[in-house]
Length: 199
Image 1: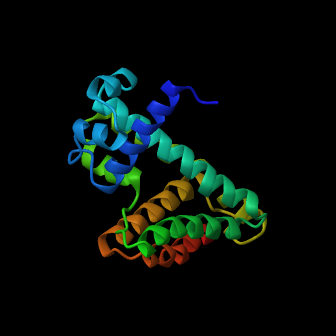
Image 2: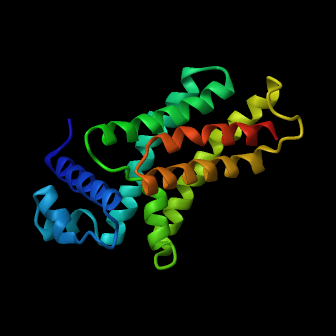
């Protein structure tokens, strides 16, 4: 069972992660996070020493969710690598469609959002986001490897080249979905991802 301290920390983190994602790091101040989490500043700083540290924790929380709910779920749901790739896109699409159907705007990728905003001014945030994308590349590398095994991909396909390209395609899809406020932009990028696997 979570202690009261852990519950408070999670409440702060959830409030901050949601606010940074839906608005922006710069647009959200500590007072707003405190209001959302129903804590005072002293409590927030007791759990997270700075706004920057809170942002890194929010990045980690988003990562753990996506790792479990999207990438690991997609890879365990199907043996075929192309179905796994499709599963990743479908799960991310459903996350955004669910919000959209409730009248909310497409928020894009939490990692791309905060990185594009803060990468040049916070190496700590930049490194945290880079670590996330590095981890996501491992899943795409596995998909590329298995796509070669079943003969879908060119035998010369280099997984170390394909994996970052696949991350980039997904990131671009999420930027498009946010810019156009249209979840379908995510699924529309799947064919491009499949072409990368073809080599």
